[in-house]
Each structure stands twice: as C-alpha cells, then as structure tokens.
Image (cartoon, rainbow, N blue to C red; front, side, top):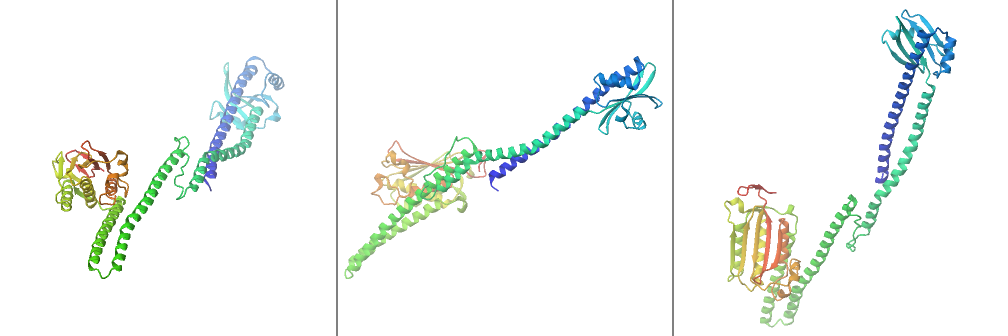
Length: 467
C-alpha cells in the first residue's frame, strides 16, 4: 500500500470516527430534548386539566374530550384522576387509546410523588394534585407523534448521510494526498535523473520553508558534498597519476639508456644514482598519499589518546632540525599552563605531529630556510597554534587553493615537493574537528592559524566540561 492510499484511508478513518461520534451525540441529544419538551407539555396540560376537572365544573369524559381536542390537545391524550384510595375518579380520552392497568400506574406513586416514563411508545406523567382539602393522584398520557417523526427523520438523514460523507471524504482525501505528495513525486523523478555524470543537477527547493522544501535543501547540500568529493577524487586520481607517471617515465628512460651502453661503467653508476633519487621521490609521494588518506579517514577508525601539545611541538621541532640542521625554529608558549591537564588534547599523536612537521617544513622550504615562528596559545575551549614563516607570501587569489591536493602556487613550482603537505594538514585538522586559516602576514610571510578544540573530560583551571 502506497503512502497516498494509506493517508487517504487514515483520513477517512478519522472522519468516520468524528462523524459517528457526532451522529450519536446529535441523535441522543435530540431524543432527550424531544422527551423533555413533551414531558413539560404534559405537565402543563395536567395542570390545566386538573383546574378544569377538579376546581371549576363537573364535566364528563365526552365533554372533556371535546374541550381537550378543541384547545390544543395532545395526540391520543388520556387524563386520569385517582383518589388516594386508588379508585378512578375521572377518565378523559378514548378508552381504545389506553390499555395500561390502573394498578401498574398507581404502584409508581409508591416510589415517587411525581414521575414520568415512556410505556409502549406513550409518554406518561404522574403527579399529586391538591384541590382544597383533597389530594388526588393524576396521570396524563399522550403520544408524541410529531416529535418522534422528527427524531426518526433525523436518524434516517444521519444513516444515509454517513456513507455519503465517508465516500466524499475518501475522494477528497485522495485528491488532497495526491496534491500533498506531488512534490515528492517530482523529487523522485528528479533524483532518478541524477547519476555520476549528472551530479550538477539539483532538486527544486520550492518556498524553502515547509518540510519538503527542507528535505530538498538537505538533499541538495548532500549533492554538493558528493559533487565536491567526486570532483576532488577525479582531480586526485588525475594528479596522482601524473605525479607517479613522471618519475616512472624518468626511471624507465634512464634504464633504457643504461642498457644501450652496458660497457660504460660510469654511465651505469650515474643511472643508478638518478634512479635512486627518483625512487626516493616516489617513496616520498607514496608516503604523502598514505598520510593524506589517513588524514581523510573517519575519526572512528583512527585511534585517539591524550596528547601533550607542548611536547608534541618540541618533538616536531627536533625532527625538522634533523632535516634542516641550519634552520631556526622559534617556539612560543603563550598563557603557560598551571597544571598538566590544561595542555592535554584528545587526538592522534602521529597525525598531529605530521600536521606540525608539514607546516614547519612548508615554512622552511618556501622561505629559503629563514626562521619560522611556532606559537601555542591555550584557551578554555581549546588550543590555537600559529606558524609564521619569513617568505614572500603568495597571491591572495591562490590562498583558498593551497589546501587542494597537488596544488602548487605560482612561486613554488621550482621547489621540491608534490603539493600534498597542506592537504594533509587540513585533513588532520578537520579530523580533529578543528579549523585552519591562512593569510599573508604584514611582514611578508604566510601565517597559518589552527584551532583544535579541547576534548578532555574536565579542566580544573577553567572549570568547564568539554565533549
């Protein structure tokens, strides 16, 4: 059963319950008001009849019948008066209209002084009447033909109208459901058009306010991410293929040249050295690709532990000094911690160290081994790490592209490298739910600023919890 039919049936069920309850209530109230109104009329007629029969003139049953029918009498009206001994004193009306025994009526006075009841579709009212010094038991009865016909007609209308209204509800429910779900049908048709080669297509976002519009917006955002991921993957594969093919082509060419001159020992040695250099470059490229893949992994598959940020920065500095013995790397610690817990970050130590070494290496390489400033600032919500080199900076238009895999700025094409370092840095920062920004510093170099949120359970100094 599709949603449209299910919605229509649910709508019909709700309407049916409401109509049924409404019909029962209307019928019950109408019957009650009919009965109450007729009993009131019987009581009024009983007072008038008692006044005529007992207080004014002595009349017989025939005269009473003529007076009663000529003066707004009730249908099949019967008026009976008993004395306290239970003897019938007066009977007004047609005897053939009345077949209830006196004893059945009198026994009701034993329980109630005044009573009303329906017997065999006749309404009865019994009351005690005082006339001077004498007390009488009075019973008046009639048939509410008009009132019962009205209630009967009402029940017929409700019974006939119920299935008609239910049918109309079902049809209107189907129309409403079709109209309400038509945007979903459009979404389904549009989604079916989207494929790997048509990720640029988007869903209509309508008025951007209702739930379906929000669903389309969410789906479009997902398509944006998918398209970006596909484009990045294509670019990555294309660039990786190019970067891998270049050294492999060089190696192949050198080996071909060496094979053409087997008698020249010095040529073989030169070829081996060149091949070794190209292989080392390939190793560096593969390691970079592996680091990039790990940096872009899901946080659930990467082991996190407590990391002291001060020690990690010092370790990264030592590693860079081994690669660049003459380099100057200055470390600045702002707002020194009062205890060990304040400088602990929940993260992956290996990846965090790779992040720092890549940034420092980038600063040293592209500033011709000029001093690099690394600053750590401890905040209540996390850590801010800034790395400033003393190079010439880059064009502002290229700032947003430096984190793309294999991208190399205009002034960096003469330097060794593959354009993976900053991509690795960004992936590691995002894996740790942090932010990274880059800008040209006023001194002319590049300033990288990283914020990593703290994830310790409790910080005693700042007195707050982090998740």
